[in-house]
Length: 127
Image (cartoon, rainbow, N blue to C red; front, side, top):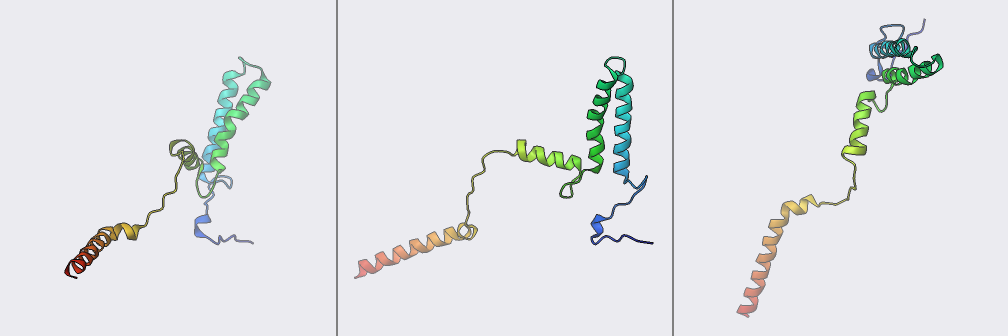
């Protein structure tokens, strides 16, 4: 008897139906329902070969969505991230460095520089 133990606890997935997770099983059932619906809906309108290809094209993305994982994201999260990065937040990004410490002490440095100038003028006037 062999027991599989994951190295990382986040990698654990409970299998509910036929070794599939609930998400995978649900997407498979939905893909099957879409394929059956398309077949019976379009078999009289278009030929059997065309309707069979239409079933595959429409059901495959739904079935694939249940098994899709990329960098810890499922299909919906990946699509949302892709749309944000490629369309919503796309554009030219200009690198601008910022010296945070200088910005914090800018007033202090300006006041110190003014004070130094005043002292040098006083020394010149008194000489």
